[in-house]
Image 1 (cartoon, one colour):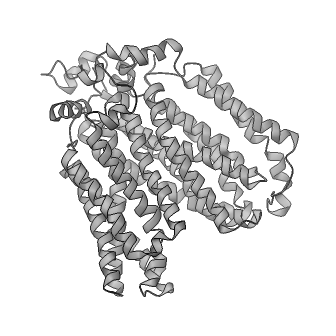
Image 2 (image 1 turned 90 degrees about the horizontal axis):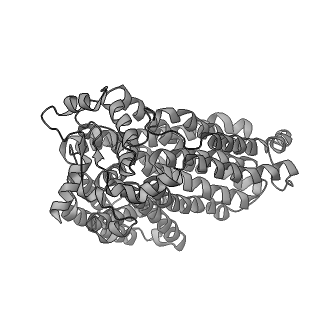
Image 3 (image 1 turned 135 degrees about the vertical axis):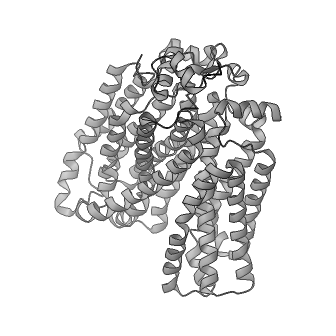
Length: 543
């Protein structure tokens, strides 16, 4: 037993798999070096035997490392059966934030920034990739579409992996996938890039909800809300900045391929940080690993014993450290409980919201520059308008954090859903009345960017708070997948010409956004300041 709560179950297999994976990626180095004199132009070059051998051992290394992360068979049986008999351990919800909490926060911000950096890189590789492979922009656009499908699949798949095998294992599995997909940077064929991009998207989409799940289950209840929203805001911003910085500093010298090659060292960073990534004690207790759960509990409470932790957390409450939650003792395995059980009303509200958000972010906002030009805004001024709107939107993230932490989690989410709806309707009426005012356009655009950023900043954190431990990863992943699914719909509708009908697209997307707000206003539950187990008890009593 360690203070992380759980160590690698098969450490030799894990590290041997990592070595094979790294060797497989490095085997592409000679071919990459051959293209140095042509600015790493590798399109059409045949793959040599060393490169083919490397491609073969990468999946072998990934499987071996994955096996090293997974629980032994007897512990997998405990996952399915033992959870019915074990009490649920609280994580010192009453203690103040300490060094252990802040260490985890920093590590997860780094991991999330690396995660966001992967899909953010797509925009920077597209120009060089389309030029080298001599493909059209439409064909090159398939890369983003495939990546989006990968993130959708990965969010659901990794959520389930996190619920069955652990949050820490799911995060490290994403890191391994990042490292393996670094070979994108040496692929001589565009089709190989598509395949690698799907796997990279799956890993990126999978880590996001699991990072929020681990954070929600580890930090004190009083600080959980604002830390979750801050994690998303800072991690996302840092990821985009890292992608833009890497493109600016490295792409001119090493071509677009270096942005894919960075997957190896950035994924390795997460692996090196694994000693500071604990397993969730709530997950550990749920699968019957009480001693390991207690070790993490004591580490984050700053106590030396369970008795000491009980005195620090709630001296007058003997049940503050270990409390049996009826719903946790009889879990329903699978998504049926999410979509048909007592969590169904909230789940469907979040899914509709996520889908509508994807339509706005990956559809309406993407086509906004073209539509603003059609409204009469000069093309040269469109970029300036969007820039000023984005600058005005920056303080909005601080407002989101404050409202979520100080006012209400569910009402803050519903408020920003309503603001998004009103912003969309504002564009509808502006187009209807042929308004060409620059100030009105800036206000409407800033309102849309603030509101849509606020919705996604709260959507997954809220999902990570409302589900029981055995379904928290699955639920968070499903909600995250809905936002990516909305993006897929947005991309498809964009190709069909839907967003060229500015007024129609604005009002039709506003409808599901408004519906989701009404659904959540009716079925949502307050999470601010409540323990995760208290939230489940409240849900049991309200249905």
